[in-house]
Length: 170
Image (tube, rainbow, N blue to C red):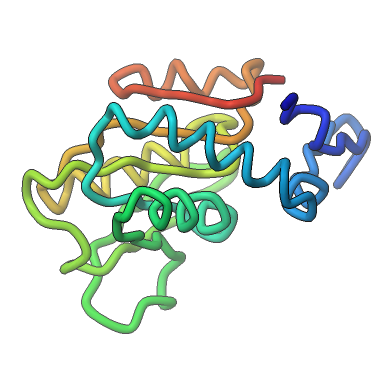
């Protein structure tokens, strides 16, 4: 199945010059969504992860079903103030300012093999911050998998120290 055919592209959204990749058309199509998850699983299995981690919110949409299918746990990465227990945080630079991500301090353990799953690889900033969170806990990032990669933004170069897979490239 050609997954790319199930992703709607909307030009000039949310502003002029942006070519938005709308995954809602993929998510609503059960067969296409299943095919995308199956392809991610096929790539992740050889990495032998022990847990899947995904940044909010769209990382949850792909990370959780991948974790379920592999019989693994899923760890959510959230914005500050969203997790109820003690957290580990990572602040990272944006084009105009900074942002912070958090994970529960007891979510991962030293040496644990972790795969990061998200919907989109753009500049790589969110994923790099997620990887740094994983590493702060002593766990090991074994790979990063995405539904979509915006190749022209060169996020893969920013993540050159990690195994990176994307199902669809633009």
